[in-house]
Amino acid sequence: MSFLFGSRSSKTFKPKKNIPEGTHQYELMKHAAATLGSGNLRLAVMLPEGEDLNEWVAVNSMYPFCMHPKIQPSCSTAVDFFNQINMLYGTITEFCTEESCPIMSAGPKYEYHWADGHTVKKPIKCSAPKYIDYLMTWVQDQLDDETLFPSKIGVPFPKNFLSIAKTILKRLFRVYAHIYHQHFSQVVQLGEEAHLNTSFKHFIFFVQEFSLIERREQAPLQELIDKLTAKEAR
Image (cartoon, rainbow, N blue to C red):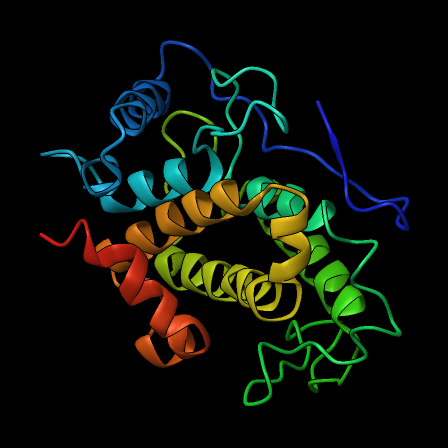
């Protein structure tokens, strides 16, 4: 299955390859799905006793389960944070254009410039749709790289795996920040407010549990984060 990224792009972003049934990753995925289905997001993101942190971060980053029947017809289908954000953004692409969003921002105080360290080494200023297009393409490449996100049994994670995961999640956070600051009124008009909040809440609980995004990076949405997480404080 694949997901079309917006109405303007010919790119198709697909979920990471399926986890083979019977593998340890598959069992972790089932555990994540069961705890997520309980409705307790704090419990859903906690590392199961005796499990490897890298593997848990990989499984949850790549394979959280969908929570919205309008976007994904079967909630037994695995969809990662990347695809959740991709689909959420896809609902508002007609409002996020070169004209309406000439810079990638999260309110007047926060502006993001794109660089991937390889093809674009010096940060460049670009529109929000262009930035997000660059970002989604880059994340897809990371997820598809078997040396970074191994799916085969016995293949170890790279020593810098958590650093890689932190960079991916930090950049995905920026898409949430842009949507909330620049397009929340359109999200409400489309009736997607509850789904956006639930998806973001799950994302935030996950990155907070393992300190995957620095607090200063969360600043554009800190007030919202405090509000969403207050009711489920430990």
